[in-house]
Length: 374
Image 1: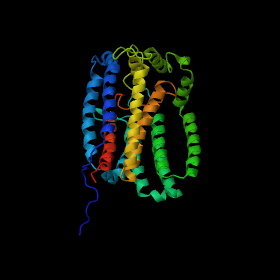
Image 2: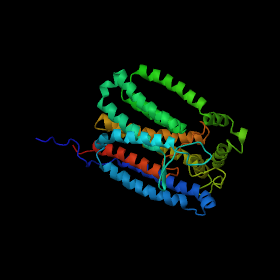
Image 3: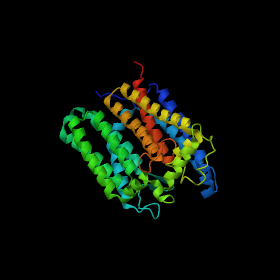
Image 4: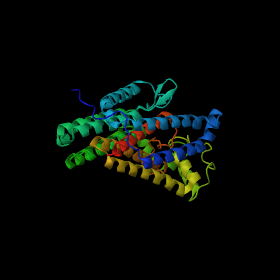
C-alpha cells in the first residue's frame, strides 16, 4: 500500500493575525517614511520625486501577495529544498567575488545584477542558512552532543561567513554568524562548545577587522567622526544632527531638513535618522516597540510550533529581523561603527523587501500549522 503523505501541501490552519498585523503596520510606516525621506534626493538626481517610492510600492504589493501565498504552503515541504537553496546561495556568493564591482571606484562586491534587477546574495544566504540549520538540527537533534556533527555545522557557517566577509560586508557577516550561533544554542549545543566557539569567533572577528582596511578606518571615524567632517565622518555627523533636531515630538512627517542632500542617500541605511527627525523620540520609540513586538510574537509562534523544525525556523527568521533592526539603529545613532546594514521594512530595496516578506510568510505558515483545528 502506498504510504500516505504526512504533510499536505496546503495548510488549512488559521494564520497568526497579530504577527501579520505587526508586519503590515511596519511595512506601511516604512513606505510612508521611505517616500518622505527619498523624494528630495530622487528629484535632485533623477528629476522624479516618485522614482524610489513607486518602485518600492510595487515590490511591497508583490511581497505581500507572496507572503500570503507562502503562508498557505505547509512549511515542512521546505526541507526538501534546504540543501539546494544553500548551494545556490554559496554559488552566487562565489560568482559575486569573481565579478568586478558594480560601483566603479569602490572595491566592494555586494550586488549581483540579473537584467535590470540587482540584489545582494547575502540576503539569500541568510535564509538559506536558517533553513538548512533548522532542517539539519531538527533531524539530528541527538547528534548535537556529537563533536563531529557540531563541527560540520560550524564549517557550513564559517564557510558562508568567509565568503560574505570577502565582499567585504562585515555587518552581513556578523548577522549571519549570530543567526547560526543562536540556532546552534537553541538546538541544544553544549556549553563547552559555546564558550570555546565564542572565544574563537572573537579572535577571528578581531583578525577580520585588522586585515580589512576599510573596517579599521570605520572604527577610527566611529570614535571621532568630527576628525573628518567632510569625508568619512560626514554621514554619521549629519545623521546625529538629524536625530538631535527631531527632539521629543519631531518636526512632522515631510518636514525633515537633513534629507535635502545632507544625509547621503537618506532612503537607504540611514533612513532611521530621518524617521527620528520627523517623528521625534516618541515616534522612534514606537517603531522600536513595533519591532520588539514582532520578535516577541514570532517567539510565541515558535513556542507553539508543532515540531522542532518549525520552532527553529521561526526563531531564526524573527531573530534575523530583530537583530538587523537593532544593528541598523545602532549604526545610525553611532553606537557601533558604520557597517552598511539596512533597516527591515524601511530601507529602499525591492528584492530584499520581497525576500523579507516571503520569510515572514514562512513564519505565518508555521502559525497556521500551530492553529490547526484538533
